[in-house]
Image: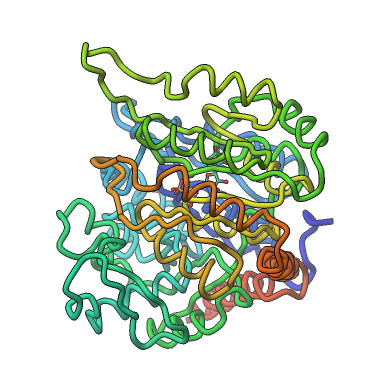
Length: 491
Ligand code: UDP
């Protein structure tokens, strides 16, 4: 079974390798790190997730289930002075959230337990120094894939944006295996306020002294980019994904990230009533806040496309109306009633059980904001996508999906927006309708994208199974940590 510990990593004569995992405190970064810890536990490492009391609540049940099935995994909640915890548990923490209050408790824990290594999220900006001074080998995690890394590096090296005359004039990023075209308007790090730029800048000091980089991806997905990433950083890159595939039972899938805001049975039986590959799943990730006017355009576009859909309206941008009242009622009730009555669409307000939905056979396409986790989850489910990037490195991920893997249709999003400050209508209803029809239609282009996506989905699953590339990488890291320990013990 998936939970049995591979014999290659079991050595009864020596205690298991002890690995710590220190996730960041928000959805898109915390979710994959928890999965990474579970992956290593299933490979026989003694895994400990380091978190705060409040943040442990969102994933403790899945860890308990793993423990009950015999996996060597546990949670260590750091003690906080005055019981002040970080941000909310509603995934509202972002890259700028200050977590330095965890510095001392983490350092004390490391000195006391001396694990063989710690995998830490680079958004804990202070953590590299704290870990280095405790003398523990560390592996960094920044949540991105290798493709995004290569694009960013070559942008910084060649500065192709300096040769164009307007924000919307396309340029090719030099030095990459494929002709990747971007515009300045799609980038956060050029001529933008430091808030936006900070997201893409390298975390100072976080990589130089690290033992390597942990990547949620798999070799077969972005082979040429993995190779050049490895050459360039001159460090080990441990690709162990797609890590979402470690969620094998319904409970793990339904509760991943947060408890879902809807009864998953309601969703599943709605999906059961639909034809194979007919439903579109629409989601903008854990943080996206769209303007009410943008939501309206999506609603009209989806309705006009005539394909059934599940639409996760996540956090809603509260805009204050003329009289000072808050406008949260986004969809005109006539429209929402029509959608409900026709049973054409299911609207989820809040948190959706994304993995369960994506893998349902009735789901045939994914409108995604191209967050790296969602991208990989779409790939793992073998789904073609409509790409609608908004912020972070999502515009780069879009190019991987559409121009390299050729499993997606761009909706035509052109403007990078800071999730904290901007939100406006960037894509009108006509574009939504057109992209959905292209993806879900019966034409040869759509059929080919679907075939390619299905093939990739198979490769993703093979990568994490016994003998697959990601599975081997996880084993190899454990072996390496073991031999490092032995040489240290005998030194
Ligand atoms: N997610 C989910 N339900 C939701 C919204 C998001 O399960 O309603 C999960 C999704 O499966 C993914 C993560 O949250 O694993 C979002 O990460 P991603 O990198 O796609 O985007 P971000 O939220 O970081 O923008």
